[in-house]
Every structure is written in structure tokens, then in C-alpha cells.
Amino acid sequence: MKPVPNPSDRTLRSAAELVEARLVAPARAGEAERVAERYAVAVTPAVAGLIDRNAANDPIAAQFIPDIRELDRQPVERDDPIGDHAYSPVEGIVHRYPDRVLLKVVHVCPVYCRFCFRREMVGPKGMGNLSPAALAGALAYIAARPEIFEVILTGGDPFMLSARRVRTLTRALAAIPHVKVIRWHTRVPVVDPARVTTDFARALRAPGKAVYVAVHANHPREFSAEAEAALALLADAGIALVSQTVLLKGVNDDAETMAALMRGFLANRVKPYYLHHADLAPGTGHFRTTIAEGQALMRQLRGRLSGLAQPTYVLDIPGGEGKVPIGPDYSGTGEVTDYRGGRHDYPPNDNKKKEA
Image (cartoon, rainbow, N blue to C red):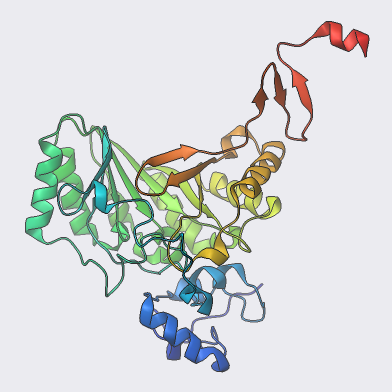
């Protein structure tokens, strides 16, 4: 499919702009406007160019274009589905696990995913960015706790910061002796790749520390030539890259698509890391599969992909109880199950084979 250029070089943020760009049908402009009044909307030129306007169920459009179903909130859904607030001792910090913290510096993103688990916190009407005083308080919290081994920068999308601010923040974290790992979570390399420059990639470096970037993508078509160039810049700068993907109904919940996505990551020097079961965020029920469906998908991947390309299927337990692996169980009492569903004794029962 040949990409359709965005009619402007600006990010689209309103129903009217989406209609003008042929991303929303005029008859649905009212619906898109209602959703945009409730949840933040942003579609970058890079993303707009990936969307097939002629496809009724385009997987890129599904992730970013407002859908009236977002206003259908189910009783089980929560404003803070993974319990960030309950584990936030100071502004900007989430300390859920003993040896690592989240540092949420910004609450804006280049795009706003329609399934976002922090959708009540991000965007123009969200929590806002950390003030200098709040950032200083967050860094002081980290510095005062020697058990903190890893700092994970998230938000929002921390790659919305300028290279200068990234460099300043990286140096501040690198100056804390007990912080050994600095990890950035971002969607920028695939949705706004022009932001990733050589200077930006260099700003992430922290001598003496391990620096990782977790790249979020959900469909193989997100690996545009520009996205691949941005990922190459990061990898060539010595940054270790891992992936994050959300299992989304109608987007990537079939083995062929997911396998192509994981191979795309691996080909771009991004190690597949997590496949997230979709969280109980408000208005996202149309995206969620069942856990059983996710486990069945993982079984199919086991037979299609090498170990390097296998993500870990995980669930964030609602309320902040942490992340747990929920992949299929291949073992039972004295037996294992292969990816085709065949069951095998372990250790092998040679006598059983002879009897058969």
C-alpha cells in the first residue's frame, strides 16, 4: 500500500482536521468530536501516512482514530487500572517494586493511543509535566533510596523532551551511584521518527550505566523506512532496544500479524520483551481479548518464531498488584505440551512407547 501523505505537516488534533485529512468520514465527525472532548487526540503526519483510507478496519487507524465505542464504559474498567496513584510517594514517582521506580516527567505524547491505560492522566487536560521543583523532589527520592537499581522514564512519552533536557536528566540520574539502569519507554521512533536525531540518541548515553529504550509498536506496518532509520540511530548509538506491544483485538490478535511484528522488531535490533494483555482502561473493551485467546496466540508463536523473537505475555493485575506472566503452561504433572498441542511425558517414559 502506498502511504497517503498528510495534507499538512502538523499533528491532527480535532475532528475537523481528521475529516479534512480523510481519516474520519464527514458523517462521523460528530461522533469523533464527542470522543475528542473526552479523551486526547493526536495523529502525527507519520501515522496519518500509514493509514489506508480505503480499508474499513485498518489496524493503524484503529489505534489512533477516535471511535464512538470509547464512550461505552464497562463497570469493570478503572480510571487508574494498574494503580499508579496508590504507589506514588511523591509527585512523578511510582514505586511499586522494591528495586525500581517509574519517573513520569511528562504527561503528553506525540500521539494518543485509543487503548491507553493512562488515558485519564495524559494529554492537554491531563496531569501536566513535572515542575522543576517536583522533578528535584523526585530525583531526591531516588537518591535517598539505595535499593533503587533501575529508573524507568515514562509518562506520557519522555521522548517528547528535547535532546538538551534528555541529556540533563540522564546526567542527573547517572550521578546517583546506586542507579545502574536507565530505561526509557516511548512510541516516538515509530510514530514521530523525525524527533530521533543523532544528537538525541547521544543525549541518552550515560557512561557507566546501562541504558535501555523500550519501543512500543503494535503492527508490522508501523516499521516505515523512517521508523527503521530512527531505530538504527538509537542502536548505532549503543542504546539497547527492547519492545513493548499491547494485544489488541482486530489489530494484532492473529498469529501471522504478531509473528511479522516480532520479526520486524528483531530485524531492527529491538529484542521482543513484553506482550501486554490490554488493561481495564475506560472505553477500551472493544480492544480486549480474553486471556485464553492470548495464550492460544502465544502457543502459535512458539511454533513460528525463534526464541529471540518470543515476547513474554503479561498482565498488570488491576489495582497495582504488579505484573505477572500469563503465557500458556506447557508443563503438567510429568508431561509437557508442544506448540501443536501434543503432550509428552517428561522425563520420557520409554516403556510407554514400547507398549504403544
